[in-house]
Amino acid sequence: MKKNLKILHFGLLKTINPGIKQQLICEQKAPTSLNWHVTFFSHDPVNEGFMRQPAYPISIFKTSRLLKYLTLRISAYYWLVKHADEFDIIILRYPLGDPIIPLFFLRINNYLTIHHTKELHEINPRTSLVSRLQFIIESYAGKLILKKAKGVIGLTKEILEYELDRIKGIEKPGVVSANGVDTDLFPPCKDCRSGVIKLVILCSRAYPWHGIDIIKRELKINNRADVEIHVIGNLERTALGKDKRVIYHGSVKPNDLANILCQFDMGIGSLALQRNNMKEACILKTRDYLAAGLPVYATYSDSGLPTEFPYFINQLFSLNKAIELAKNFRKTSRNLIIKTSRPYIDKQAQIKKLTEWINQQPSFTFKS
Image (cartoon, rainbow, N blue to C red; front, side, top):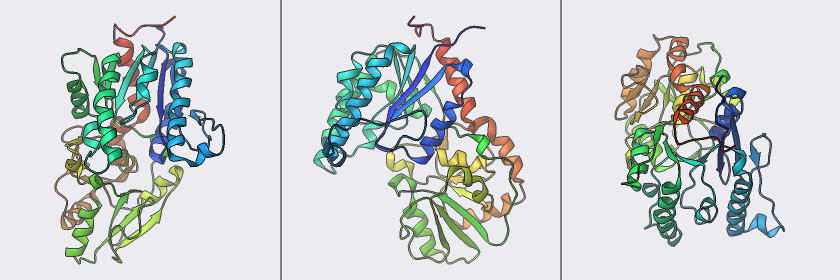
C-alpha cells in the first residue's frame, strides 16, 4: 500500500468555538493510514490532544489584549517553524489580517492555506483605525502568504476563486473542501415532532450575515400563534425581541445536541450572507441540522450539497413560508433525511477526499 504524505492541520484562534472544536476532535479520529495530524493554539485551557496554549512569561501577558495577541502568534508560529520539517504538508487555517505571520512563514516551504471567508470583504476599514490597519496588513501580508503557498483550499468554490484571484497570474493547485461534522454524534433518533411548528436556530452571536434581525422583523409583523422559535447557543435574550414565541435554551454540549434537536421541525440557517459579499457557503450549523434529521431553510447556496438537495431550501425568508415548509416536511422521516445527508456532511469523508487530493499532486512530495 502506498504511504500517504504526513499532513498537519495547523491553526491559531483566540478561542476555539464549540463547532470548530468538535470538527477538530473528529479530525483526530482520522484513520492512522491517512497520516493526518492536528495542532491548534488558543488561549483556552488545554483539554484535548490537539490543543496548545502559549506560555505567558508574567501575569501581565494574560491581561493585556495586545500582549496576549502577540504571545499567541509568536508562540504558535515559533512552534510551527521548529516542527515544520516533521511534516510533508502543513495545512494552515488562514488567519485574518495577521501582522506576525510573514516573519515566520517566509521560513516554511511546505504549506497550503485553507480559507473560510473572503478576507478583505470581512474587514470594514471604515469602522475604526484598528480595522483600517488590519485591512492594509491583510492586503499585503495575505498576498505574500498566498504566493508562497504550495496550494490553496477553499471552503467553497466562490472562496477558492476569490483567493486565487488575489494572486492572479500565479498558477497554484486549488481544491474545494467542505465543512463536515462527526455524524457518529447523531445516531438515529426518536421523532418527537408534535404540536405547533418548532423552528430552531443554532447561534451564539448575532453577526450581520446570520440575519437575526430578519427573523426579528418577521416576528414583529406576523402574529401567528402556531409557531415557536427555539434558540440554542449564547445569543443575547433580547436579540429577537420580547416575543413569547421565542424560547432560549442557552449553550448545549455537543453530545447532547442530537437529543435536543429531535423535537424541532426545521433548522434556520444564515439569512444574510450577501452582507458579507457571499452567495455561497458551507456552514457548520447546516450540517448539525441535517445530521439530526432536520431540513434547513436558508438564503444561500451550500457548496457541500447537491444543487437540488431536497432538504436544503434556499429562498428568501418569511415566517409564513417557514411554517408551511415545516408542515410539509413532517411527512418525511427523520432517518431518511439523515441517510440522504450523511455522504455530504460527514467530516471523516471530507478528510479522506482532501487527503487523496493532496497525495495526487505531483508537486507535493515527501520531505524525507
